Length: 116
Image 1 (cartoon, rainbow, N blue to C red):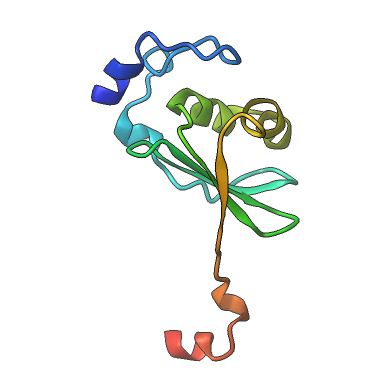
Image 2 (tube, one colour; image 1 turned 90 degrees about the vertical axis):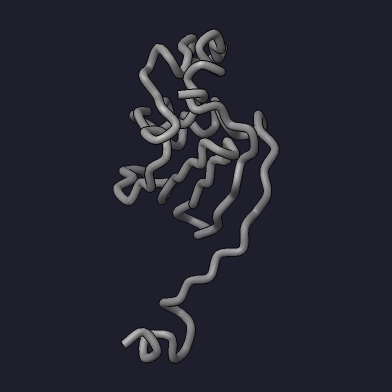
């Protein structure tokens, strides 16, 4: 509930709404999105405790973590019809980021045998 209280008066210029207005809670905000209908964004994840948005891209397979992203941005990203357009308009070049090392176990020799 503290997250809502902190953001009650925060309105992002792109969205014009606050976390309170869209009914976000710290528990409801974090969820792994396995079904991301986008040609450019494979998956997104959000950690409300650190305000870190993780974005996996289809073409490169790379993951980038964006720092200090308000929960309203994450909520709007999830709801956006065009994830790529929303990313370009509201996230890219607006938040600091870092490329994360992602290990794809499907390509590691012997990994499948070790799982079973």
